[in-house]
Length: 294
Image 1 (tube, rainbow, N blue to C red):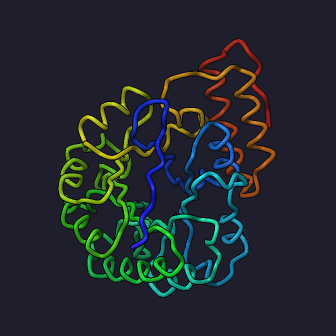
Image 2 (cartoon, rainbow, N blue to C red):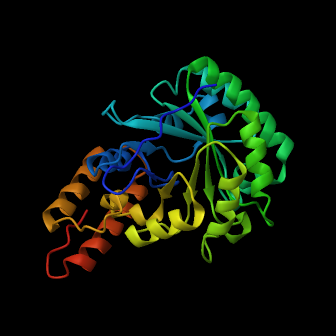
């Protein structure tokens, strides 16, 4: 079985801090900016395995890796047809990525209605088959395999599902502490993540509501997880990947904005989202300074 070395953040503890895969956000430019801010592991946004198999140029462009080869890179795939996942893994398209992650946690309606994302937690046999086939493929390509999941769709089945993932050959689990039907409402259930951590032997990364040093410590204390994954807090504030509550200078934030703009290679509307998020941070921390326009 292919196993990975956990990347650790030396500024806080021996626990890993990972930036989450965020659809419409963690494109090539944002990943490069996260590396500039200190990230040693970055994740793509979720990428459609079937679109890759069909040779969709825009989807293939989403696979552009960051230039720094010392940074560990993870590609997240979503879809329904297992043979498409296997074809992509075997194709060589993912050669720059040390790990393949299977999305089994996305709650977006358009993803669920196509039997992808968190819908797979309602179809355990299908999820198991997908994992087993991808495990065989990634063993051949010498890549790690992981699953990003939730506590369940409409009820907590996380322990049973996690044990299935482990038995099927997954190297680590990333667990978002909400049900699929919750979306991003309410607060993450850290007790649910703790139950998963206690039930399996593979590393478990906790996801949900981590945005600063205090929430980082709270999450680790209540879950016992091997690390945390930071999501929406990074939008417009990539320096928060360090979770040390420091605030960059005005000039540094503007420089990160310009770098994001320079490297952007995706949808123009995504760049606008990034820019507006940066502007919000500037107005918060430096209200007397001018806000750059796009």
